Amino acid sequence: MKIAIIGTGNLGRSIAKGLIINNAITSLYLTRRSLDNIKEFDGYNNVHLTTDNNLAVQQSDILIFAVQPAHLQSILESVAPHLTEKHIVISTITGFPISKIESIVGAQHHIIRAMPNTAIAVGKSMTCLCCNTSGKARISVAEAIFNRLGATICIPEEQMQAATVVCASGIAFWMRLIRATTQAAIQLGFDAEDAQRLAMYTSEGAAQLLIKNGNHPEQEIDKVTTPMGCTIEGLNEMEHKGLSSSLIQGMVASFQKINAIKTNQV
Image (cartoon, rainbow, N blue to C red; front, side, top):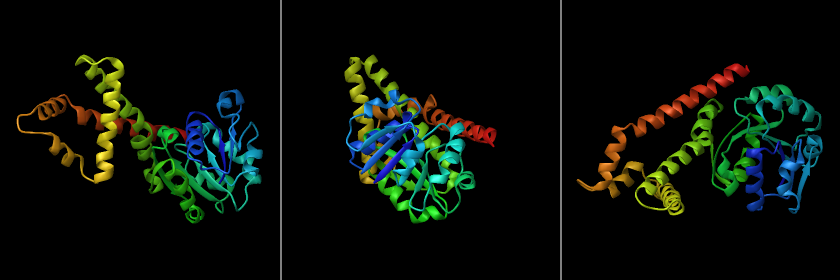
């Protein structure tokens, strides 16, 4: 696949790493205003670094836009004359609706919104996708790309704001939970390196149990808890201190914030 990432910042860099590691490219163009910031990709076969967005568009079929929201409109206006019927336009920009993209480049183009997370760099992203009417003919291409970099789900566009909180911001939420588990392990006597290793792989194992077995979390919890045991004692104490309610309230607060940002952008 001939892919261009327009705006190789933190997310764009993560996508590029995932594409390269998983051999998902025929060619890959990476654009950024300062190429010094992406020189780590210099030397990879079929990977080209450029400051010229138009060149990247002309040499690619799949365009992944990962720029700052404030820059997307001007960049789309600049590359629009170079778009053809072959191009698939994939935007990872939060709060920039498909209707606005269509108003700039035309509704006839295959337009897809993707909300991956930074775990895409290690092939473990949960990526949410939605598209315009023309994009339905190419949504399978986007699924094929992002399924090689983790898992995908197609959702209505109106759920993309919530998906940003659950999946993109969710990485930070889970990191905080892993950090807290690490701190507890240190307090219980493990050194810092071992504590983090215990926390990381235990959280990975918990997720894999649900992914592989398809069970509800409570079913797996029931397998670990015994009457008057240490697990239920710990769980109840956490709930008394508001673990679940704090997490839910935090995610709702994040959702309210992202909606406020969107409102201010209109």
